Image (tube, rainbow, N blue to C red; front, side, top):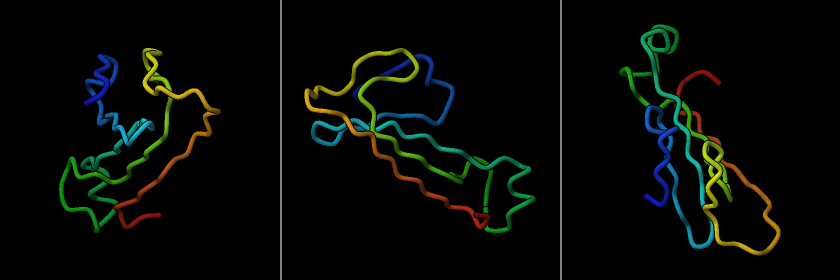
Length: 85
């Protein structure tokens, strides 16, 4: 792990490094209500959605994470693992 932020400790949040790029990953996990509403989900805690956002700084504490000097153009990926869109 490249960054351990106390503000992230209670959520499904983690940082990954890919070369000079740093990504913030956020998971939304299934609750009992989600299981009742979506028959594609199998268990509580199952990842429903994941968002991966390229970052230069931690949005929770402000620590600089990427060692880049060029202009930073954020990118993101979104994944939906549930049956509902």
